[in-house]
Image (cartoon, rainbow, N blue to C red):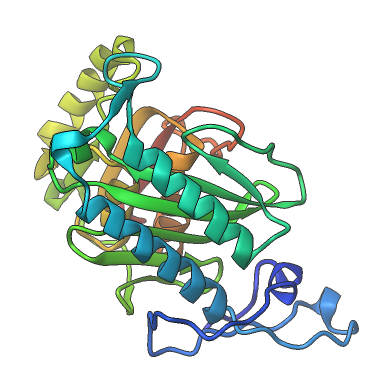
Length: 293
């Protein structure tokens, strides 16, 4: 049960609908903070919001599973490793329409462009339609759809879905983190008995030598290392205890927004690699870990 709601006004504006997708047996509720107690507002059930987002994301996941690889159109964006497919664009369009229906006043920011601007106090969905596009192109089955809801510069809800494994991770600020209805938490293992996940910064290859230096240090201190190719899923795997640490020297907000909340709600810590607070204003380094390391 959620002990409090990070943003009561947001959920006051949500039109509750009967969900097509039941994510958990727990009845996820929130009550208003002291500042709202005298406003006469009803207590809102947050489960409706997460249910609607999860239903939408699962529908979009079918696009990934049913992709026609023989006729896939692939474009190059900033460089040879920065790719986009017609399916990235189609899923982002579906998400834009569906999320607008769920919360009309929210702005929309997605990896594939045509974005609104974040504000200091407004709501915004931050979306990666296919995190791990290269994996998707290669049929590597390590890709995910990531949707985060921000209030100002703070994440209040997040969903990450891997359609290949039919695993859906979700969290509400202050309400814990879940995978397929089961509450998850970060590992309690030290680095010496842990896995280190990393990103190779393929769009900024000049950072790879530094990445290898850092990775070499972790390699001799950890149980082993892994490279998955999806920042969103790497964060989910730290959140559910499959790995103990993840780092990358340059990621975009849509890569980490939902996963950041998942790790934090699962009891972990997420900062820049230098230990500073993450910014949603542009690209940044990232370090996510359990609370033992």
